Image (tube, rainbow, N blue to C red; front, side, top):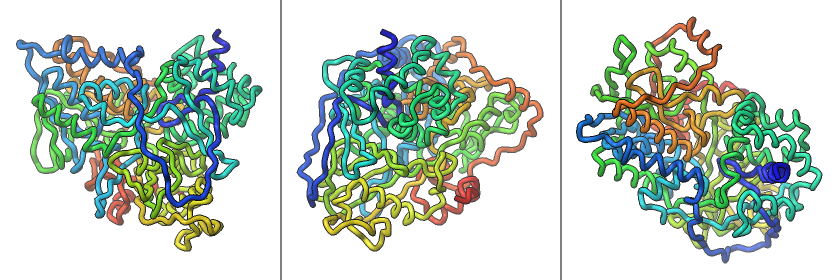
Amino acid sequence: MKTSLALVIAISSASWLGVTAFSPHARVIHHRPRSTSALVMKDYPKPNVENTENYRIANNLSNSFKTTLKSSEGTKKKKVAIIGGGLSGLACAKYLVDAGHEPTVFEARNVLGGKVSAWQDEDGDWIETGLHIFFGAYPNMMNLFSELEIHDRLQWKIHQMIFAMQELPGEFTTFDFIPGIPAPFNFGLAILMNQKMLTLQEKLQTAPPLLPMLIEGQDFIDRQDELSVTEFMRKYGMPERINTEVFIAMAKALDFIDPDKLSMTVVLTAMNRFLNEDNGLQMAFLDGNQPDRLCAPMEEHIKKGGGKVLLNSPVKEIVTNEDGSISHLLMRSGEKVVADEYISAMPVDIMKRMTPKRWANMPFFRQFDELEGIPVINLHMWFDRKLKAVDHLCFSRSPLLSVYADMSVTCKEYADPNKSMLELVFAPCSPIAGGNINWIKKSDEEIIDATMGELARLFPTEIAQDDKWPSTAKQGPQGEARLLKYAVVKTPRSVYAAIPGRNKYRPSQTTPIPNFTLAGDWTSQKFLGSMEGAVLGGKLAAEVVASRSLGMASKPIKDIQPHIVEAAKSHVAKEPPGVKGDGAIAWGAGAVLSKKNEDLLREVDPAQFSLKV
């Protein structure tokens, strides 16, 4: 039984956290020339995401804020200052008001969402920081949608994954999950029936290395953090074609990096968390922009519960007392914010710039040096006509692109019957992420030209030859679709880089500072760097504060590596540089790089431009 289950796990390694998965029944879609699309947007009923152990755990934690962690009449409500209005900060505030406290979220920018923020261009079109997909196996996110009563804002798609065929331009392979067959056996059936991706021998060679994951569980998974996916694969004799057929797409979906840079612990963790849920890999699109459709209901809930959410409120400095505890937050406006508890929901790269001098020699904070955000680029491309699209997410299996979707088909707010708008993830985009070219420092025009070349492969009979884009020079006369406009959103430091050896440095939400707690998807939690991880990180931070307010013992601080402890002793503490500038780039999010933004990035993150390739 374990052997057959291992085989299922091995080949359905598409059950990962970010945006990718394999599933049953392969079939190939052949593209034919056409100028319009007859495709009609179709949403599917919400799957049963509640009948899983992970959802029950998430729901129990949510309920605890209204019961066992609820401040009683004899308990003082805590005033809590939360730095950062991304998903993690908003989730933290949401659960703190549920527990009867008074949080205030201080967001530096004029929009909520952080790495899921969005804004409108001069034409009124929405520009999103990233292409964000919701999975059935996001238990805390699904629980949050239920609590906010906004499940109707998710547009669930057919339980299917679609991959471009690298060797057959213009053709795609789909893998369909068969209803009624429980996980992981639905994967098993897919493996037996699908002959498109891997041979039987390759499947059999993939299974044995993953048996220890079943037998030893999390201990084995954690030990693999020192190995990249590629190193693990070669150490255990897995076929090289597994890399090209499976692991490259997986790595780019998980963390925007290639398999030779991604920790195997990330892959195994995703498999371990997602594999055994029948509907875990069914995907949904939000029906509109994230600030209005997700962040706004969270903000409304916080305000209704007595909390506050303040935009355009950048923190200049975390001011400490002599004993290291926080005295107050000094705002750029000059205002001093005093609270009972303080929570950072800032990205790790920003938190490092804000860490007070009195904390600089503490091993807990020194381990932050081992973590950094990974660069990623998100593209929006508007065409003058409809491309032959699918009402789903597509996995390009391209050297330049990770995933894409025609948002004019998949999302109600962006629907357009006459023109396509593709949103694409361009990754890896830097040698930091394992790429061969530093696209972060390239011009928008160079990035779009490279992307047009990839789209010419994906849509060989539809993309027009256009002198403006040299990469389309070989397109035939049947191609008619021309690019009308585009937006290139660069996030120089996105989710933490899950390279080998990093997982052990992700800190606990509990810190050595008595009135300071950490939130964020980069903190220690089981759903990695993702929207689900951000919500869970904020939720766990709220649990720390709520428990402490009731006099309960705090959760222990995560063990810190001995070499970090030793190095901290000789570290020369300096005043923190703080955050320079304004806007998304300054505060660790994504933006279309104006000259001002590029100059700021060169100043505060010169590593993005020092790479010569």
